Length: 285
Image 1 (cartoon, rainbow, N blue to C red):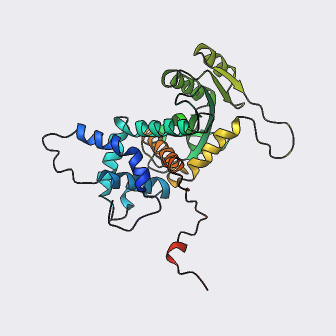
Image 2: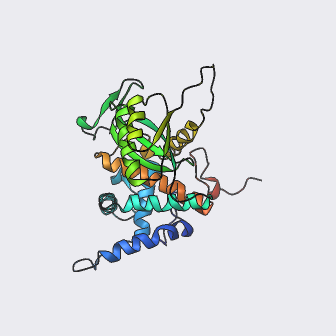
Image 3: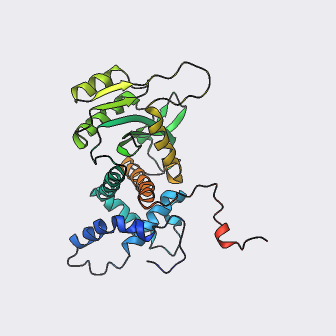
């Protein structure tokens, strides 16, 4: 554990214990000539990634008591490329499901998408305009289980329709979650998605909006909407700052890993309405 003053986004001992074996094995597998000088604590690397994810700052603005930002980003990129970040996410998801009394393998999924604006460092070819939401940027297409845990995420230009990306999500689910046999989606997913799901052995049901005035929770659909809300607690995801779509996808995995690790250890998630200074302020008499 670092001797520096802790940040609210830092891993607790209990949260670090959940992922430490995977990252230690990852480092051991890469030991060899020229690797003995790796002195950076893996826990501090993860803390730095979560700090960026939670606060939304640029990598170059990481506080100086973290490892150098180029080193942190190098680990972030490596763990995206070799699948380590996704593996950590999937490990935590399976543990949350089991802890909730369910099997690790889900049998149902819920589909939805979220359009967000992009920053100026994103190539024009990776952006588009969501004509419905009037947003120029990218779109996250996600599939969750019935607990709201992420099963699949695809990042595209915002101009890509839900139906087009929905078919890709179903393809991904058919390969990585073969037990999924039913999926719920909103009206943005057309009959082609339903037919494509049938070809993949997944029955797709479209949940229609309730034709009454005022706000109403939609059956099944509310779960994925809550997941999108969980993602928005991480400021790095409020706008897409990642140059590469795959890096953006990985940031989504880290955000969900942050949330799930807190669920497993019973730790509350700080919101931006919390007064974080209270812990350092003497009680008023």
